[in-house]
Image (cartoon, rainbow, N blue to C red):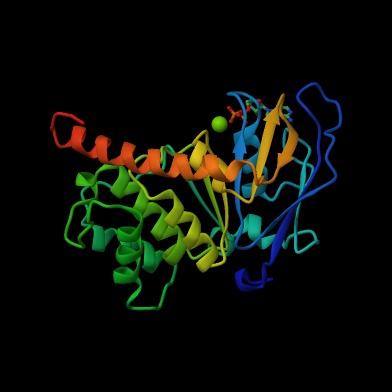
Length: 255
Ligand SMILES: Nc1ncnc2c1ncn2[C@@H]1O[C@H](COP(=O)(O)OP(=O)(O)O)[C@@H](O)[C@H]1O
Ligand SMILES: [Mg+2]
């Protein structure tokens, strides 16, 4: 099975922290969908996305099983990092020190055996869709702001890692245009799973998985009643980004 052939992944239940069986049938994540995982610290959010990353086969702490297109995934997904159809970004993901943006991307493209010679510029252009602070090829990665770094990571996962599935575990998402990231998920037909407490991302997601005691407690889908609130949160979020940027630039905030 090549990356291009993946259409969906299925999560089959395992057990809760207390050993009881998890009570959901199955969860299907289809390419083009945005999923958010919510729940208190320690509730099993990271364990849930680790299961996806490892293609768990009843062999992780949770006892869950992951299927690809309804079948057990090929072993090479787990064994061979270059065949792994998943890119994962965590708080610990960092750009390599002291490289220029273009060199960093070139290095990664070479490692991924990417042949498209325009991919570097495309990645920078995509990252610039996600952030208002323009990224240039000649900037040092260590000098990028938090928002620029996150925008670049997501663009890099989308075009250079070019995997159908992207996992983001509690990366801070201040300073990126979340609605554009989610629109991009659809445009490039990726499945993206966010572990997040960000109300905007949670409300923009196609599914919201709620975790408790190491188990999936429920799966919510967007409701009509949430739409007016979503609109207000989008405006608030934009305003927050402006204020955050002003503070970063050392300006005073007045109304
Ligand atoms: N279903 C489970 N059964 C047993 N241990 C679990 C289960 N889910 C999570 N854990 C363990 O509980 C701890 C907290 O889970 P974690 O996924 O890190 O929580 P979160 O990311 O929500 O803060 C971890 O040590 C994890 O391995
Ligand atoms: Mg966690």
